[in-house]
Image (tube, rainbow, N blue to C red; front, side, top):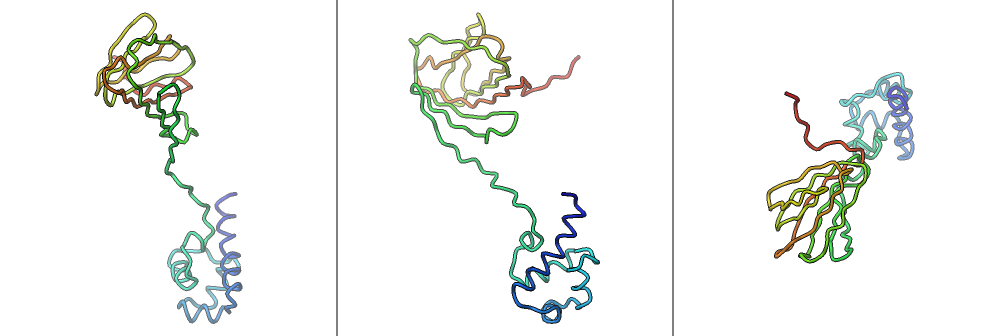
Length: 188
């Protein structure tokens, strides 16, 4: 819907609200301080709705301005993570899964004797070690990533990680299935 159509709909909405309350244009005019003529033109769409006219009407009708003009809901921006546990690893999703990036926190118990399984798939991964130590295999490279450090890599390279111990490992992961990098570097 175009903005012009949305603005035209405000007049109809104002008329419907007034009529649902059993009020006349004259009664609304007296209570709001807006002339009957202006109210009539607002409701018919002949006059553009402006804030100085809408605020007194919102107060009179005891409606939030968004409800008065029929603004679409913005939605709840909060994420309500539900931890998942698999093989002793706790994964807490931190993003809604609707964007190009997936964010999650993982808590891994020490598994020093478990072989690391490597995976290959399209994408780009960034892993920040919050606490503990992470053993990361990238192809033939065997790396230890300490608390406060991060690793960033193309997930088409064979990769896998685990917790060599002795403490619990907590990591923050950002994954982009399209392969976009977290950091961009200027070329020299």
